[in-house]
Structure formats: C-alpha cells, structure tokens
Amino acid sequence: MRVSDLLRRPEPTFSFEFFPPKTDVGLARLYGTIEHLAELGPGFVSVTYGAGGSTRHRTVEIASHIKNTIGIEAVAHLTCRGHTREEIGSTLDSLASNQVDNVLALRGDPPKDVPDEGFSDFRYADELVSYIRDGQSMCIGAACYPEGHTENPDPEDDLRRLVQKVHAGCDFLITQLFFDNEKYFRFVERLRRQRIDVPILPGIMPVTNVAQLKRFTTMCGASVPSALMERLEKYSDDEQAVLALGIEWAIGQCRELLAKGAPGIHFYTLNRSLSTRVVCVSLTGR
Picture (spheres, rainbow, N blue to C red):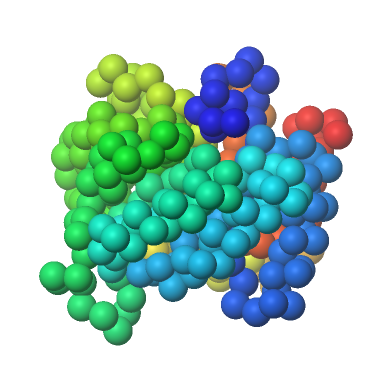
C-alpha cells in the first residue's frame, strides 16, 4: 500500500524508524523488536540508509523482510550523495523486485573517505525525487525541517527548496524530530499557504538519554524547550527518571498533534521499543 494513501485515512497512522545493525546478531535482535512493535498495528516501518550507501544492501534486505516476512508496509530510505545514476537505479530495481513500493528520497552524505565532487550524479534530493518519479511507480516521501535545515540559514529559501522538492514528485513528507509542537503547526501552515497539500507526518523521538539528546539536537538543529531541558538536567543521572520524563513529554506532544489534525506520528526509535511502545499504548489503548 502507498504510504500517502495511509496518511489520508481518517484514523491516524503510527510508524517507526529503524537503522540497519552492523552484525547478524544485531539484525536478529532488530527483527525481534519490530515483531514486538507489530502488535501495535503500525502503518509502516522505515529503514535508514548509511552515508554513501554504506548499508545499501542491508537496507534492501531489511525492508524486504519487514514487508514480506513480518507483514508490515516498509519504507526504504534512499540517499543520492556518493552514488551514480546506475547505482540508484539498481537499488530501486532491487526494492521493486522485493515488492517494496515506498521510498524516502534523501540527499544524504557521501562516504567520509570519498570526495563527493564528480562522484555523485545527483546533488540534491529534488533531483533524486525527479529521477524516481520518471522511472518508477513508487510512492515517494521526503524529509522536511520545521526549524529549518542546518545548512541553510535563510528560512524562506529553505521553504522554497522544499516546495521545489514536493513539485518534483513527492507524495508525503516526514519531519525532522522536534519537541515544540508550535514549530510543526507553523511550519505546516507556511507550506499550506504555498499550496502544498501532501500529508506532513510529524517525527517524534521520546528522550531516553540527556547527553544523546544534546548531541542529536546539535546535529539536526532542533531546539529543546527550556521546560523540558530543565527537568531532564535535574534528573540527568537517573536513567529511569529521564526515561519517564521522555515518555511523558512525547505522549503530551502526540496527543496535541493528533487532536489538531496531524495525520499520524512517526517515531524515531533508535532501534529500541520500550519508550515507543509505552507512548503508542497510551495513544491507542492497544
């Protein structure tokens, strides 16, 4: 099923993101985690894609297993930096042959040890979106940034580039993680004024570790409300207290987002199930 169709249903869609483990033991553990969360009836599960395609084959393998063995719709991330047109085409063909019908088209980063200049056939995600749209019948998602992309200090130019990406053929958008819902609501309003009507799925990450939170938000440019950060820092040495605070904040975020019209929630799980499961059960009663 196309994710864009799921997101236009009256009932909210819950989905989870995972990254490919480096070992077979980690992979078996990941499948167990996904099967555990499958009890919650997710609309789809997405699988990330390492820099320059470093996890390309494992991403295809995991997405195929999720779709064809576990029985949940899969979204395979696909990045274009550090790739030739032929490599992208080959990956798309592999996904299609495994009945994976949904992709998240991203710019991504080239491998650290390979200069990107002259190596990538695509510079930006909108070029990848256009390529997929021209050659495949897949449902195409893309990333968006309610607080702006860290590499673009001009919010209006950032919005213009996103609109261009949607016009290239995007069917839905998933946001970067955020902790202040007003950032999402204002962002959606700005896009709607640009006559962009694709579903915009909010991305939520329940906090489990304060140092990790600071590292992630520094990398992606997301802000943390002072009310949340002050409480987290007060209990930063108490793992269980931080976990409880993260769950409490995520539940509050999700309830407000759904009440005000968000099409669902996409959880950044960090390959863990406990916090996400608690939040989902609180929202759905399952």
